[in-house]
Length: 272
Image 1: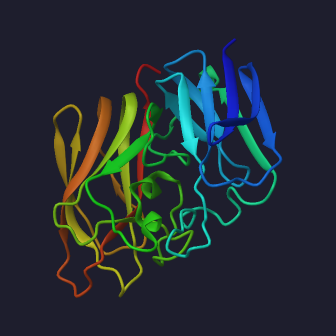
Image 2: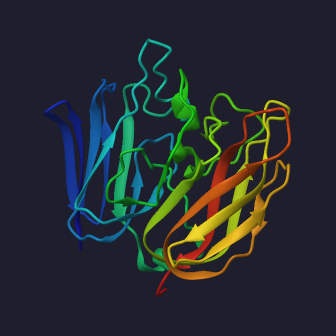
Image 3: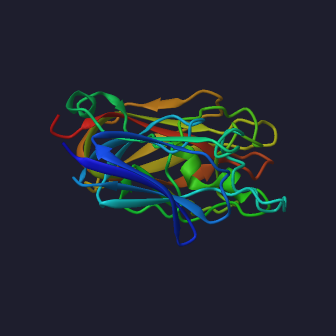
């Protein structure tokens, strides 16, 4: 049995807390305020856990390397230039009743073939919670969260537009040296990579080539097309802990806006 807990903090004040063995839930009966956060603790780490940060979101299958994970609540201010929730379902974190869960992943779940990249609860400042993505650039402006790196592993494949949810993506701010890194936090064995590029044509452009580099020092050049569908690459790697997509070459097209909607990596945890 592993002790786990969920706590809602408002500033320096503990608002609500629940603790138990292996599987717990918390219903928080208040509207969130700016600065609120959820704190998840796990007695046994590193390890695999299933966490739901909101009743309007999927569960996240995550690998925790730290005993305490702090998840800041995206806060929607009245000022339209701070749309922190614009890349989430409109029901997320809204209202005055919130359903939050946490449990230890079952052994059979840890051996499943899955999309190893997906993490609906990833956030920019994530520490000790994987998978996690980071990038060297992000499109800025009034709706910057709509183009954040975290969007490429949230499991949402809609790519026919660029605004608002469910059309979030990673925007590169027209940088030619844009690159994005996906960290697994542990060794994984993969056999397939899928890239879904944004396809809001003619607003969008697209990439004709990119390079994926792996933690084992190997790399592959990927040929990309103008497509609305996921582009599938059979790439077998064992025991990798991260991969990076970069060296992206834009098509000869008038639009300056290529973007990435989703990265999917299919395989299993190493050793399973």
